[in-house]
Image 1 (cartoon, rainbow, N blue to C red):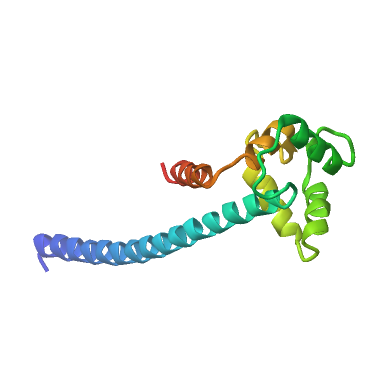
Image 2: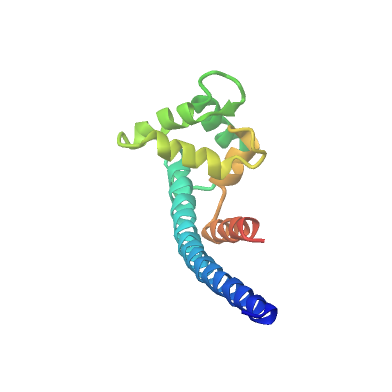
Length: 149
């Protein structure tokens, strides 16, 4: 076999490896797209569930004043820390929905916690209680953009 034939054989073998790699990359990309769609659906469900969970803490359909929201917040803030953790939220929503789960309380905190400290302060609490359907949609869109720059 001549030197040229050896080089051609090596190139052909390399091309086959590249083709196999491309097929593998295509499979991974398809799987990633499916996961992304699943995450989009999951986030929308979490956002709606979180807002619905917060809304059971107040009078549905009623515009609340700052003092009314602060009163609700203080009632839920059983440790007096000025922040609501998942356990406090779970206890509060269980009064309205005894089947509420820890996962639901975690979703509520994750949705409302804008400063990333793992708890909901009074301003975050007010913001969620005052959300309108169009605000929820905006929050979903912003979260999607942040997730997929």
